Image 1 (cartoon, rainbow, N blue to C red):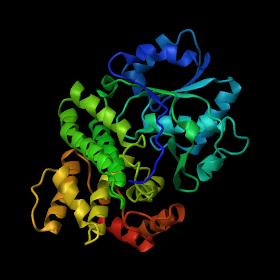
Image 2: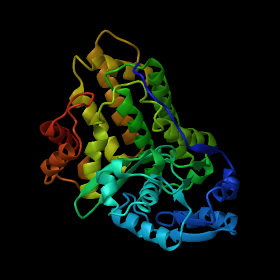
Image 3: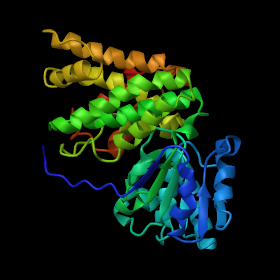
Length: 386
């Protein structure tokens, strides 16, 4: 296991009724609050009214309509609102898109140039307005990390940015707030959680304890996703998925391993940059194809661990047969959760595959991935997804 530093600065309020702590959490940072949210589901399910009731003694501004793949134009709009209203703290009510957008807004308030600079050059991120979140979907883990992914539709770019000060100060995780999610969002969110773990699990450096944690998170997703789909108000299922989301990407699973480039996420970012698809759906389609593409004598032992420890297959002498069983089980699971498992079902053909493959490598050097990938490799993987 390599040396590492692990710091998780976000205070988590987990469970039923934790929203009642919101006024006490926010007052530490000031009276002027910007509430950010997406398409209005929080108004339909009552979360918005509850937040407003609790914050009656605060000065409230709002930024609604944050996109599923949050856009830099919305970030710029949020920055203007913060500056005009002397905002002290941003309250992100929603999922990863709302939280990511809020992080860049918080950073952009203190940056004199254009906020897209902070996406292209994260080292420019300095001071950030305090971010507090009320989570409504188990998926990205943005509620407990310092990363944000922002899209620029003018340039067909979707890029990740990271700054240590962008981590939320506190996050409220009430599993009941995920009861009304559309089934595809529950499924896609679970695929996103699993992909975060898989990207760290398949690395060259071994870290036994971290891999045991990773396998536990993956098994939790497999155990509870279908339950949540069949019974959306099953608290046990929702609570396990919500906590899995946070643990999958708060830095724990990847510590002690080499700092290798991720593979599926950079490829998916180009898919959703060009076609604006749901991130978790793209990851579900890509992951088993990437697995098949990189399976070799060098990687087969790790795939055997994955098949045995995550999917419960019995060990056998034929390592490749066992590895393929684990990959097949992954693809079958996503399909059974209702995710369309090829790009054609999303209206994506081969017309832009070469352009996207070039963009992947232009934005992210994958020569240091678990299995190094070049532009031709990425194109081959994308073709497997059609």
